Length: 352
Image (cartoon, rainbow, N blue to C red):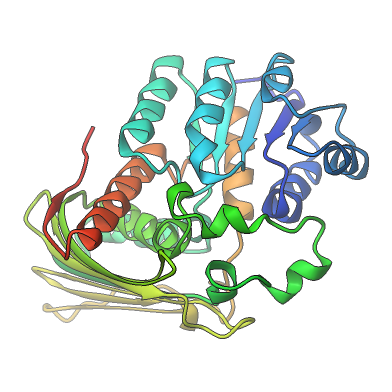
């Protein structure tokens, strides 16, 4: 806790999304000062420093962390998250890590343990978790709104085909502050593809809302040039519940992502249509808790996790995208990819 003073913030990996979301949110807070920024490319680094007003810039993240920032945003390429987040936690910072948390479940659980041991907050950039009414919905489900959860379904389709396939990327990248390197999204060895890049959103929301923990998975994927564009999985959870998760890069660019969850239990069912701003809970006893979701309230944005990082470092707020959920999400996706490569053979999810 910092006693309400201004926090010194650092960003490791000041690329496209950090420049579009994380840095502007930090800069807009009166209790934050932008201290250090890191990215590769001297010209791009200086552009970020000058435009946003960072006090210090370096291509070496160790130099940024040596200034002892209070909070650190890790938005580097997926495969570097563990290295950068571990160093930030070891330097004493509270950390926001972009999703996917890591590619290797063992690395994810290592970060969970590091954060606990150092008494630091570790937040994952799962923006859906912070949209209005999501915390209320999580409380309802965990308090038995549908009884003991027995079966879940989750569909997530997004307008990301240009990201994972082809050379052009999003049209809007032509005018964005930075344009991502294709390798960030299209290298299978570096976590390229829909499962790590997109299902990490919906799986994290599902696990957080329900409290379920994945145990085993059998999955298939539709791949193009080694990159998964569509994924489908059958999941067995630790407590005996079953589920199905599927989705793909199927929405035309500019369209709203389809995110729909169905959660069935011993006492009823909840249908959550995020892209329709709709949630209906029906119980066998006729009672029906209601969520008054206004049109447009569930349009995706990722400001919530950044605000949560700062609030938690200031000694207030709630972490609605905690690292243990991020680690279970990584474990499930890693097992899905392994199962798909093995022709849908069942694979156990790596647990802490």
